[in-house]
Amino acid sequence: MAITKNSEAHPFKDFLPRGVKFLVIGSFPGPRRIWKIPWFYGSRYSQFWKIMDALYGSSCAMSTLEGKKALFRKLRIGLTDIFRKCSRTKGDASDTNLIPLEFGDIPLLFARHPMIKNVFFTSSFVAKFFKKFFKQDFKEINFVTLPSPSPRFAKMSLAEKTRAYRRIFPKV
Image (cartoon, rainbow, N blue to C red; front, side):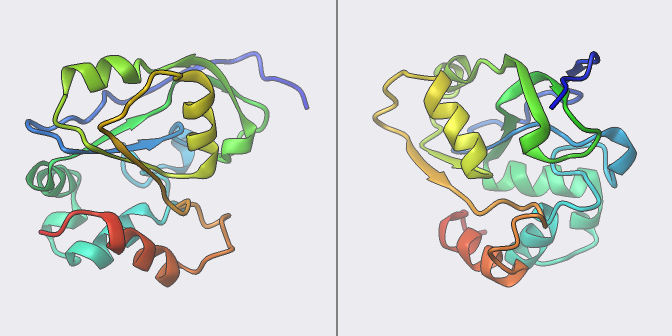
């Protein structure tokens, strides 16, 4: 397994709406060539926005980037990724091919946004790295590992993933 010489900086700023209560932590965006939208979970293969459509209703507003942001502002859901810089062993979006070079400052994010009480990891891969590298005691925060929205996580169907997300995501 060879490490690529190229490193990638995260292309997006954290999305932290005013009064954010819920935080989704992912890994790192896939390569630009597979983006459907230029934002979190924007890969044409990611099931994240399909799951959100199922939870909150597919509407004209949800079909646009601004619509997605407006919904997450309303629900007070923030988005970030655990890695700020990575390299890839292969040119695809798989988490297993990511080599972390720099982590986001998630403890600072929690300090600046004390209303965050629920954190959703988008995979066990992300949860593992979080637990390994952020040793602080976050007593007042509830951490949940979601089924990965990647279609490569084939242990669960899209319908099963949607049911799992529905149990924990905020209601409108």
